Amino acid sequence: MRRLGLEVAVFGRSTYLQYVALFQWATIRGYIAYKILLPVTQILFFVELGVYATGRQNALYFALGNALQLTANAGIFGVIATVANERQFGTLPLLLASPANRLVTFLSRAIVNVIDGVATVVIGLAVTVVLFGLDLHQANLPLLALCVVVISLTTAGLGLMFGSIGLVMRDAIIIANLVYYLLLIVCGINFPVSRLPGVLQLVAYSLPLTRGVQAARDAAAGASLGQVSGLLGGELLIGLLWAMGGYALFRILESWARRGGLQEAY
Image 1 (cartoon, rainbow, N blue to C red):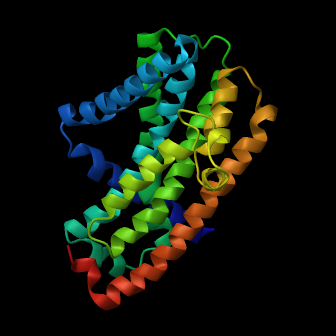
Image 2 (cartoon, rainbow, N blue to C red):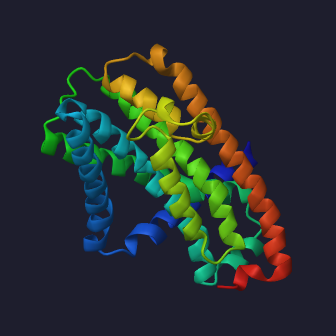
């Protein structure tokens, strides 16, 4: 019990320091540009394009899908950037040499990005509702909020997998871009997954976001927790599998980076 308490304290301390490193160094202007302009411009582009192609009655479909996909911005870019920054600033060798529990250290890198992802979705949705006058009176808002949290967790799990590559790869952010836009294309953000070829449908359902976005759309239509529990359970399972795979890859690449001196190469 005492050891568990110590691990919880380490996790909390590491999460706080991660928050300080990520956000307190940024200027207010830069943070606003990242947290408001980026979400709003992506949502506006795809909502306007979708409304032009299919009609204004589908504005909520495009707005909700793109707002939820923004969790990947924090979950993938944020987690990958934490490892890349450790390497860039020369602190990665110290981290790898420390006796700290690797799992606690690993997960604390993700949790602050989960919170950041939730904030991004809230801002994006709020601006969209104001600009397009979207009606959420029929929505199950507590369930929709739960869907946002779940999606933020699962996309961070995916980010943990690709963040591990930053231990040995100089430009891991390139992978983040590829994964981010893959999610945008195959996860049902702007069109149903059923319209994809069979192989891409398999890819879609092996990734986070796909089931979560569908659950969120059902919640926005007024569905109950029981009606989307299967979707949310599957979403959590997929995110857990990606996170476990990411942790295993982290341990493998940690040894490789230490032997090859790659943790100091930038």
